[in-house]
Length: 245
Image (cartoon, rainbow, N blue to C red):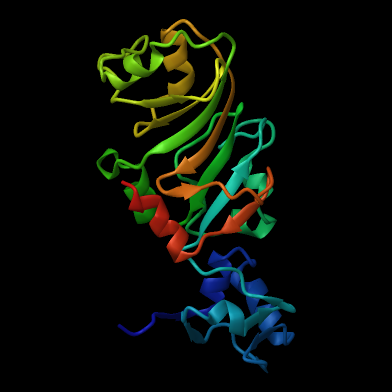
C-alpha cells in the first residue's frame, strides 16, 4: 500500500506548529527544508513516509513525530490525568506544541492524582480503545503500601471473583495479590474501576498509603525513566502492552 500524501500546511497545523497562514510564512522564510532543500510552498502535498521526521526540518529542528504517536510516561505524584482540572496536569509534562496536536494525545486510562507510575498516552484512538477494552484483558500491576499489616486472607478474597465494592452491583473479576512483606504487596488486575485498588483494600478493612503502577500488559516501567519523564514507544513496546492479554 502506497504512503498517504497530505498538504504540508495541514500536516504541520495538525502537529501544533501554528495556523496554516503561519506555516506558509515559515515556508516563505526558508524555514522548512526536506532533505536539505527548501520547501517553498506549504500548500504542496507531502508523502507521509515513516522516515519523514528524519528528513523534514522545521525552523532548524527535526519534525515532530507523525500521527500514530504512543508514549510511556512516568507519572509523578500530585499530577492529574486531565485536560481541564486545576493544578498540575500530565499534559503539562509534554512539549507545549504537542498539546495542540490534532488528533489530540489522550491518556490510555487514568491514574489518580495520588498514584504514580506507568501511564500510556496516544493519539491513535483505535489503539487506545483496543488497550482499554474489557475484551482485551490487558492486565495492570500495582505496587501497594498499606497502613496496616496484611491478615493473610486477602489473596484468597481478591482471587475469588466475589468481592463486592461499596455502591456497585456486580463483583470484581479475580485479582492476583502477591505479598512482599506485611505491608507491601503487588496486585494485578484486568479491570479499571474507579479507585479500584484503594476500594478493594478498604473492603477488607485496610487503607492504601501509597500506590504505584509498574506494568501494563507485558510492558514494564523502565527503571531509567525518571518521574515526570516520557519516552516515545517503539512498535515493539506497543506490542508488549498487548502481548500478555
